[in-house]
Amino acid sequence: MKRKHVSYIFIAVAAIALFIILLMHDRIQPLPLMNKIDKRNVDKNDHGDTIKALIFYHAADYFVYQGSVIGFQYDLIQQLGKDLNRPVSISIESDPRKALQKSFTNEYDIVGYDFKRDQYIPWYIIESLPHSYTYPVLITRKKAKIDDDTTHVVHAPGGYAHNVDFSILNKPENWVLQRDPNVEMEDLFDMLEDKTVDYIVCNYNEAITLLPFYKSLSLGPRVGDNYARTWVLHPDREELNNDINQWLDEFTTTKAYQKLCQKYLSAQSNIIQRSFGAKKNNISSFDAYMKASCARYNLDWRFMSSIIYQESHFVTGLIGMGGSFGLMQMMPATGARYGVSDTSSAEEQIWAGARYISYLYKIFANKVADSDIYYFVAGSYNSGPGHILDAQALCEKYGGDSKHWPDVAQYLALKSHKDYYTDPVVKCGYYPGKHTVNYVAEVMNRYHGYTVTKQEE
Image (cartoon, rainbow, N blue to C red; front, top):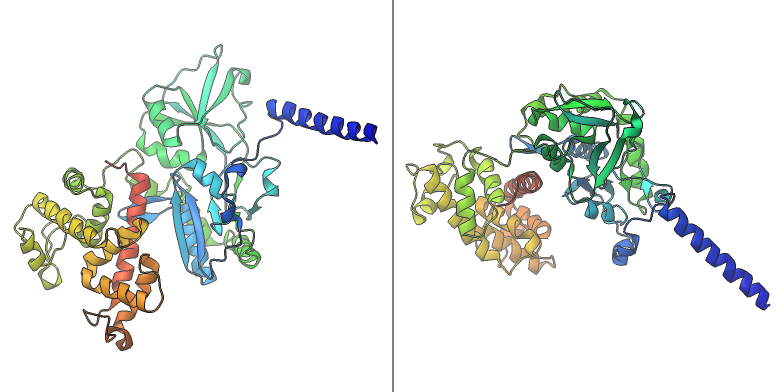
């Protein structure tokens, strides 16, 4: 019996030793972050009819164009929800490590993040059918001279998912791929332009999106095979997953899909040529005023930018319904309270607007969830704080969560119904709340876009 136990121990030790040897030689990839996943997130989590999606910030998949959030995966998931007649909630993640971790939880029905699928990954995730294909390309500086007798280091972000093949290049043995864990693709483009590095590898979709904003860089040769881009799906929503795959199977054969690819995944895309570009951190010509005023009142200038775009599209001199005026479209009474009118300069209006937004912020500070406070501020800017406070009171009365915007928004929309606007807890009476709910959604959608495309200052 002892010999039997000794044999088992010997086999176990040998297996562990073999695993370590293979791991050291890159034959086995460790399971990413599996030991760090919060087990509370692994429990079944049904999101009802809403399709809850996460998109990793990617130059072609998600960006802000003329005040609107667009992008290949963003539009694709919106179309999915429309065709399946389901509401869609899309979140954005710009940290690749967090995106990778969230791919292994069931927090989302769809995770749009490209990461290396090694031989063990399929055991832990469910993948959709491909939603698109791409391939790796070399990016160089224009007119760069390549010395075939020296070693060339090609840089890629640490989480770069594609297999790179240098066999097409002269003397492929002289080309070496180096993954840099602390930089993103846009950082590498900057480094290449600044001559900090000499070569980078990028997938074609990102390359054609970024290159118009780097005039000194050029698209090099293809250095790898086609790569299928798929979504990570929720493991417990089998019916929804089947619907998603059936939809992908059908939609990817349509002219609408071809137009979507032409819009975002083509070098001839008008959207790409006209967009702000990843390099530029400006939103408007008034950024300096907004950054200064928001710093004074401890606000995010990108939130204020989203409000101004919603109100005036950064056009000065506008006079709206009820006499609202200027960039902030303040009503005359509110403007008078903060010392501005339709004759005030853009700078004066912006400073007054920052003071007013700060006032609204203080109303809800410590009364709502920190993650939701800008939703309440945006709603108050549109409707006045009284109607938002009414909606909170109704929410509390009927058992909702008055600290979170989604619950409060439902009751704000109900304030157009007599049973609700005549309720004793309501102080401000009738209000067509659906307009404000839509206003908040547009402002916050744009603001979230700005947070991943424009630096905070």
